[in-house]
Length: 66
Image (cartoon, rainbow, N blue to C red):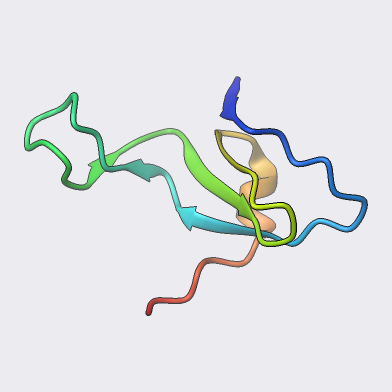
């Protein structure tokens, strides 16, 4: 199961924004780090963003800290 905008690129450039975590406002403390089975993926070409717990996430590069 996944959710978000689907990437439709022929040559995608996917990166992991949040690895197995989220920053939920539905959990306490609100808006803070929470462990999750899902990771947040982003395509730098089409700007699509989605969450997934697929195994391919392990092979993707992580977002560099700013």
